[in-house]
Image (cartoon, helix red, strand yellow):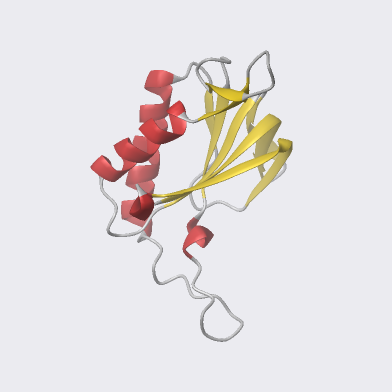
Length: 148
């Protein structure tokens, strides 16, 4: 499982010209799932993400977590995080999770986030989404379950 976590001032996602999710200060998270990932993988990744201390305290140090700043989450499915670009110029996505499996874990992760964070917005699995955000910093973290 892979997450790209962006600390943002705001973010939104739209499908077919309609905004389906929008947040203020918090995270825009792009989440990629492989077929090897499980609910336990998801739990570990969500726990790590929620407790990252990447927001500044009064002294300007990155000491505060999402929960400390009452941050919000915009959670998006992103199978292209499993792009394999080693051969040729056209990426292969064979390592991305099959849609049924990936969608089930995506929905599970959204539910986990909602248990810990009062504002959780999300995209639509498999849709052509347009994402807008104002990255704060910029500050972007990549989490890979293989590294945890």
